Image (spheres, rainbow, N blue to C red):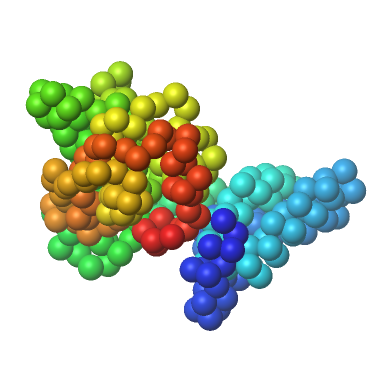
Length: 278
């Protein structure tokens, strides 16, 4: 997995923005707290193990996968917590503690103001699709997941009515599998499987591959060599013509397997970043 990520997220541009991206993860106006927290962890002998952990994780990401700066988010709470304690001491140490406290409260609120427009659903879907800046932001990536799960549910129901009740669902990429599994109609879908990244390690369990509902061109491409018939049933597009990883995702069905899931499973493993064929 690390090798696959390195190939996709270690370009020169990723290295150029890797350091600043690490520093600004918590927000531009929270940078002083982040810096104070990192220094504070090193200075406190009781917490130095946290400082070592943070350093190792950040250095590894910066060297190997600088384009995946959010991979350090797991250690960020320790840095911000220590920085907050340092900031509290700083606020009460000065001559004007109320002014300093006001600055500390205002900083994350200002940072939140700039972030909220790109993460919270305060824009109509049509506005996101018509705005290039919004479409390229993380906001576009939050659109279409319940509708995608509903589309998978609908094809499952249609196949059942036609006498081809699916015995499992195979998703080409992990986010397709997660959406179908978590947002689909409870209890209606058969087991949801995927060979993508960590999903492959969970295996097929006791699922049958007699009739497989398949999502994604990657999923159909993986199964086609091992099934006598694979066909596309529909193609999904997010609401409002928003362009994201769900745009143009096919939903199909494969029947006539050459072997059972356990026999096929070793051939279905691939490690890749989302949207990147393995």
